[in-house]
Length: 200
Image (cartoon, rainbow, N blue to C red):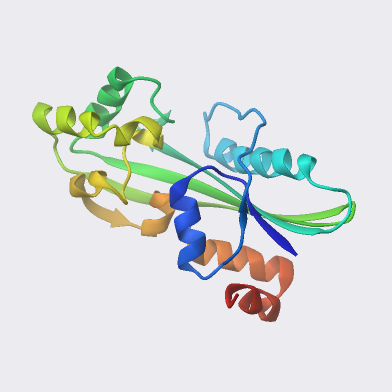
């Protein structure tokens, strides 16, 4: 069975390596995503990413595809990836000194011939940011880290220095909860098969 990560995110690759899932292939999704306006849209984007990669696979063989999507919610507004340094600045000013919610959805898809089975989960965590000075925001933007991250920060990178508190799974904020992923894989494949898969 070929394992495929439907993501170009280095964080998600790191998480799969962390739990011992070896030899997976990375295939970035090509399909369009929906603009996130509500939590269920995060789940829909994980589904669309997985389906986008499934379309490219051979009709024969067995594949396990893992997809994920993350968005940040604050004051009733979802923040995706900033399109410019200025937008990153606006996002960081909004997060400064406040709590926000990170939603991450994971989808796992088992393709055997023409048959596809899928399982999805939507997870969330609450994050409290410290109050940021203008100098801190200028410095953080200068690192370029905010520019390819939902909500304009990466908790696994320089952005960690701004996080005061988390309620929930750290990895949900990073991009994919190993616990939630494992639960989906067990539902789809069974415990014994998953543990063998994780053992390499």
